[in-house]
Structure formats: C-alpha cells, structure tokens
Image (cartoon, rainbow, N blue to C red; front, side, top):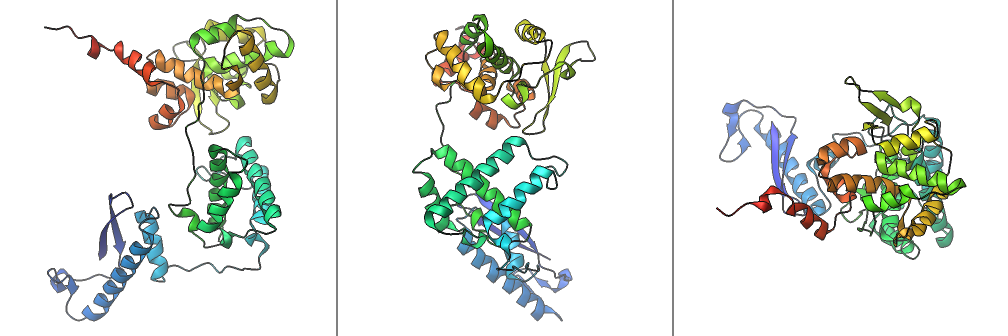
Length: 392
C-alpha cells in the first residue's frame, strides 16, 4: 500500500509524495469511500495509516517553508516513524568541532583518500581545495574574534545570521555566498559521515546569497588591440597567454597548460585541442584553426611559458591600459574565457556548440555567464529574419 500526500511548497507549486506504508491488503477489504481497511487486520492497518497521516501533517506544517522536497519529506517521515536507525552521536568526539573535521577533511581530499560527491573516481580540483582552506581560515577568524568553538550542532539559522552579518563587515555578497556554500558542503559531508544529525543547513533561510556583478568582457575589436600590441618580457608572455584564453574559452587553470600533447586531428583531418578541464573534469574539443591561436602556440614551440595567475592579472591590466581600454582595471585572467564565450554568442554561433567548447553544462548557466546588454540583444535580434519581413 502506498500513502499519497499532495502538498504545496513555499512557492505554491504542488509536490507529490508517495510513501510505502509497509502494509498490503486484498482490494476487497478496502473501503474506497472512507479510505479505510476492513476485515480481519483492519484495526492495525488503519492505525498505521493514521500514524503516517498524523506525522505527515506535522512535518508539512513545520517544514513547508524550508524547501521541503518529496525526498526530504520521506527522510523525515522515516525518522518520525522510527524506520531508520539514527546514528549514535558522540558529543565528546573531537570531530564534532568543525575545524577539527575540516583539518581531517582537507587532509583526505589532498591525499586523494576522499573523492568528489558527484564522481567517486575524481579527485577534488586544486581550486576547490583552496576554497575549502579559505573557508577554514575564515571560520578560525570568526571563532577567535568571538572566543568560541563552533560545533556542527551550533550551526542553525541563528548562527547563519550571525556569521553572515560578521562576514558582511569585510566582504561583498558573492564572497559571503562562497563561504556559505563551503559551510553547507562541509555540513553535508559530515552528515554523510554520521558525525551529526543537524539538518538546519537545508532550510530555505540557510541560503547562498549572490548578486549579479558588473563583470566585463572584451569585444573583438578590443581583443584585436591586445593582439596587435607588442611588449617585452613578462608583459609579452602575459599578453599571449591571455589571448590563448580568449581563443579557447577555457579557465586559466586550463588555457595556461595547453601543449603539443593536447593537439590532434579529428577523423576528418581537422586540427583540434582536446582537454580535460581541471575544475570539472569535463572533456572538451576546441578547433585549432584560428591563425592567431596557432601563431602564438608556434611562437612558444607549443609550450606556453610559466607565469603565475597573479602576474598575468597585473600585466594584462597594464597592457589593456596601454592600448586604451578604459575598463582595464576590471580585466582579469577570467575575462579571457568570458570574452570568448560572449563574442562567439554575438557571432550567432549556436549556444549548444559554444557550450561544447566552454564546458558549461546548462544553457541557463551559460546565459548567466556571458555578458549581453539589452541594447546588444536588440541589435542581434534586428538581424534576424523575423524582424526583416516585407509588407505584402
């Protein structure tokens, strides 16, 4: 027998819950009008159904405004009805302290003993490890300033509000959001490890806050200015490395390591770059026919010079300033990837084909990433045949 419960979430959308009752019954012993069992075992079956109904109402009334998905609903029902063994939490365990757990967690992911959530065969990327370490450092600062030690059971909505307020004194919204994202990730990992049973981090109010920042991109004309500029030393290296990013649509962790071993031919003889992206593990294939890109790789015998991301960020600003790009202070290594994606979009290359190169998983994610103003969008649409119809 399945118990069916159709409820509205916090946005008014209907969600279907189907829950296995653990009972079975002959259809002839079921009263469809009263929705109750009849016959020999009716009393125990009806009592069980009533308990499930009672617990469902209680869970819904308590959590409906906290992103109550059917899956979470089932988990809470299982706990309420004692259908799962609750892990025994040792409150004196040093791992209850989040910093202690983080120390072990970071050691495990650096050594490869622990792999990513989505793919148990893939190691954590260096950038992810750096982000987790940054969160650990920030949490230590918070603890020191407030003279406390935060445990997993301390992390509720009150803690969230205090922590976010504290972070807001020195950080922008997106930086705060990154720290909260790391906190939620660590809470989930420790929950999976049976370190705690605190699910407050799943509540609607415990959210990763973000805002749309004024992130810029360089137009094709501006990229041409950089391409035609000649520099020396570190500036010249940074200029060419940055341009490789513009032409390949990759992150700095990927476009700085492109070498001869990544270049091959397709079955039809087209030269391409084959890369497995460091951050996501996504395999991408990029056409290797742009003469500007080929020229840069040939200049360095297909092995780009070593230059730190910090140095590239400094030098590319100097170059952009030198060629007259007013927004030069906002240009970073990541501007290369965003510029390539946006310029391909303006060139009317189908979004799906651009995503195959950039490695974006969804069109929604991609559209948030590119920079297209309302005016640019209108100009692109003006060239569409829909707006150029003749009056009959």
